[in-house]
Length: 335
Ligand code: 5GP
Ligand code: MN
Image 1 (cartoon, rainbow, N blue to C red):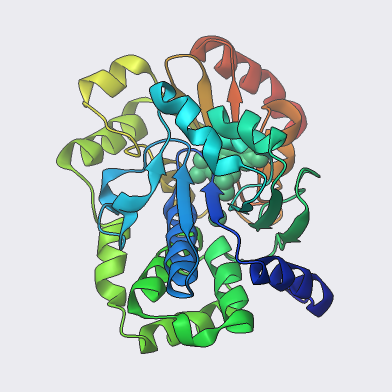
Image 2: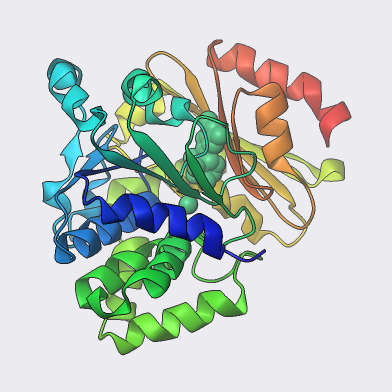
């Protein structure tokens, strides 16, 4: 599908032509693509003279501290709730990046939904909701970073510098799992090459994004794979869980469980991997699959979530045991 078709792009450029103050917002628990696309767009629009505020609904993992000027992003906290309302005033233009539904910005969803400002969605998740004034949604794309790059190429190519390229490369790399997923298209690799030509250090970004474990995090992964994993061989399924006690035992930090769900996929015959993580008030669930097993559908239908065909997330308000029992009861029908 052609991205940013001429007539739609023109509407966006007309809005930018009014030189509004800009808000950029992304999903809670922001990952490499959410942080990378948001910071890239912030740096880029600031270079073009705009005033830009970038909001994260929850903290980002400390291993993304190196992202250029990420400290300038405003991280939501309950006690500053009211001060965040100003970023949703009617005179603003709000870019919504890397999410498809207002509920994905958690506590800020009320401000976002009620805002009279124009809201621009740029995203690659399936089935975006209708809360946005302009919708640039391309689910087959590798990453929101690839879409932001496309936008930059159509708007003003000269502002793309090394820092912006580093932000974009981070999301491109992480959302494709290091260019392994089927969302990696020729356009993805052309873009990677162009970013390298801007002088980014691709090896260093790979190490910062993927080879950044604390020893505890490595031990947590080993523990879960050894003790908290079940295999359903005839369904080519693996599922794992992390309970609160395990979290405490390994002193795990925000983002430390990121990536664990991918490990069972290293077994050739495993096609689906599911991870259940016990939070203080809910269970968060991550789904991964190979080939045409559609985990977006499963997350959406049974676990209040969504995402992509091969990577999705959801949640449950029941206890960990109840959630696992419910999931086990679904196995015969959904896989
Ligand atoms: P993860 O398992 O890494 O948290 O999420 C996998 C993918 O599914 C990501 O692209 C993420 O944005 C999306 N995702 C995760 N949780 C949810 C959810 O609750 N709702 C929706 N719509 N997408 C989700
Ligand atoms: Mn993404």
